[in-house]
Amino acid sequence: MIDTYTTKVKPGWESDVLVIGSGSAGTTAALSAARQGASVTLIERYGFLGGISTQVLDTFYGFYTPGSQAKKVVGGIPDEVVDELMKRGKALIRPNTYGAGNGITYDPETLKVTWEKMVRQAGVRCLYHTFVVDVLSKDGRVTGVVAVNKGGFVSFDAKVVIDASGDADVAAAAGVPFEGKAHGPVQSLTTTFRLANVDVERARQVRTEELFGLMAEAIDSGKYALPRREGSVHITPLPGIMATNMTRVAGIDPTDAEQLTRAEVEGRSQAMEYFRFLKECVPGYEKVELINFSTQIGIRESRRIFGMYRLTRQDVLAARKFDDAIAQCGAPIEEHHAGGDTRWEYLPEGETYDIPYRCLLPADVEGLLVAGRCLSADHDAHASVRSMGQCMAMGQAAGAAAALAAQRGTMPRAVPIAELQDRLRKMGAVLS
Image 1 (cartoon, rainbow, N blue to C red):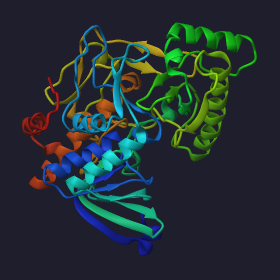
Image 2 (image 1 turned 180 degrees about the vertical axis):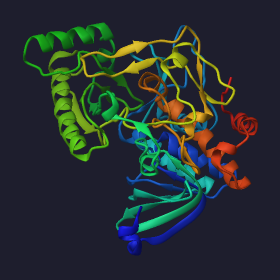
Image 3 (image 1 turned 90 degrees about the vertical axis):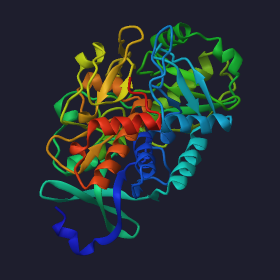
Image 4 (image 1 turned 120 degrees about the vertical axis):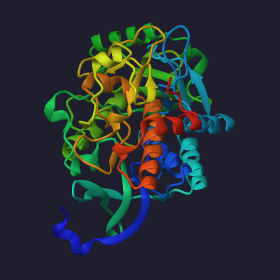
């Protein structure tokens, strides 16, 4: 695969487990594998850890089920992350705008250093500003990756590779079949932004229905170009600061750089219009200032691999259970389609479904696990299971499985499920 530049590739680090991408799935995977005794390398394209959790969003969803009695369904390493944020006074629990369960809202800058503190303590070797461009493989098994940074091309070898890139970059390069924009719709993208100098008490008195009504009036007046007739603005742990999830850029293939560039520009343009709307039309925002956009536009869906099992819409809505469960989810199907609203479909009250280990195992390639939003799932199931709480839980399972496979000299698909589940329960994971 890399014959054209083989002579330019310098040898890099070798490790038991190599994790690509340091989002909520990847960082948790690295921590999990390292705590199970594996040597771990974590490669990240940006200059900090966290992915979407520190670039775009400020809320962990999926920790709790919706409904009248919230049930906690994510535990273990994710709890430690939240506890550290709470100890610093930089996190709070709040109800979701749409009744999708309590969210844990935090300060993204504090989360960056929290992630770094934890991976340093675990002995994970991190390499920032490094972008994966190809895979190394032998006899159908992924054995590492080729990456590029300021020093040129570098190879990284490992016994097991975890693709937590979000876009399934490693899996796609390895020839794993997947679905993406070419095979049907993918969810819209969102540029988030934060606001300072908000009169928070007055702003919180504006109910969701009232906010949507003000949006409709603004759109119908012809004075504001707001593509989405809904959206949320919520409190944060910082005084006078509110965060938004309002913009919508549809019809984009996030794996196409040209389209993604257009989306970045359009997202910030929309954000400025929503900012103007809030400032001019909504009580509590009269003196507001926009202080930052998300580091990049938020991507909900791009590539979804085909794994040994494919989680389906029917599995989600029927609250299906699996013998190889490695995590739980109670989040509704939340589809941000191209229209002005969002499609919500909820599980039965208080119910959850299981995420099978097989959804993390690519169908046709050995030596590779995926974790996070590139798991094996159909479009609707993905719209439920992509919450960051579940991404962390998947990462925790992938890391434990990778360490177990490396230690036994076997492939991830040969890991004994009962032993993996036992290790996860000892870590604090919630499996039932």
